[in-house]
Image 1 (cartoon, rainbow, N blue to C red):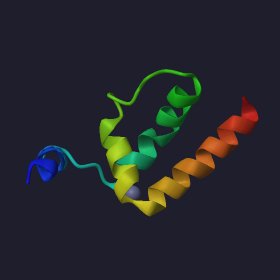
Image 2 (cartoon, rainbow, N blue to C red):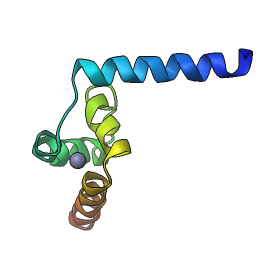
Image 3 (cartoon, rainbow, N blue to C red):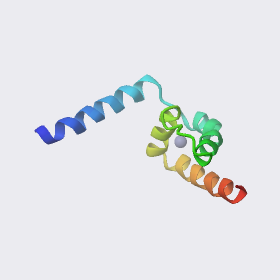
Image 4 (tube, protein in one colour):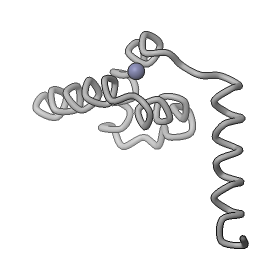
Length: 77
Ligand SMILES: [Zn+2]
C-alpha cells in the first residue's frame, strides 16, 4: 500500500491538472515550435510548457510532429 501511495498521488495531481486545462492538438501545434526552440536554446521551459509536455505524453500524433520539428531545427542550428 505504501509503495503505491506516491504514484497514486501523482496520478491524482495529473488528473486534476488535466481537468483544469487540457490542450487540444491545435493548441499544442500552435506552441510546438516555441517549445522546441526554447529547448534547443537551452532554456528551461518545462514549467511553462507543462501542458504541452503533458499532451506529448498522451498524443502520439503531436509527439511525432514535435520530433520532426526538433530534427528540422537541429539541422538549422
Ligand atoms: Zn495532439
